[in-house]
Image 1 (tube, rainbow, N blue to C red):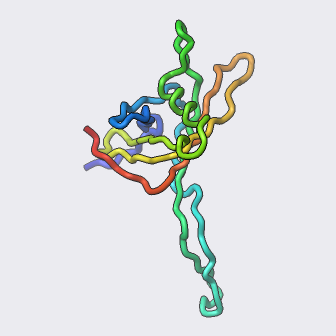
Image 2: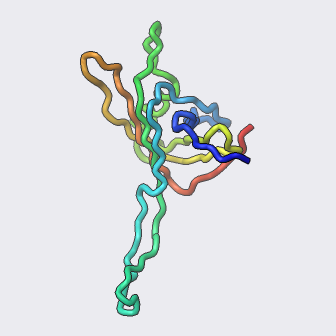
Image 3: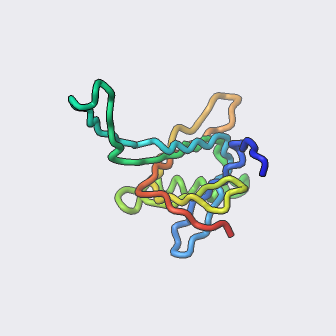
Length: 151
């Protein structure tokens, strides 16, 4: 086995259409995908007199998020937003349990998808006179990461 570096652009990210048997939608136009496995982590300081002057802590909560950035993608005939971007925007407009969706991601050589139940929050969209309109979304994991086989 040869170890190799993995291009960030190869990360495959899909959002569920929300059906009981989901269709997984690619999210078009991405230029930056940044999973952060330590986001929303909470620790408690357990340093006391027996710690000998050294810091001690326990992790009390794990979290994770993913920042997606790219270009806004629309059908040039219908004006409809890319289905993956549209699903992210639909979830980002919801509140309560309706705001929960599923996202999965992996690198091409992975045999398992990492699957999150998550909330979705849109970022700024726009740009300068000579720019392509930007699109961004923050996906924040809710609960533990699940896995499913790549088929």
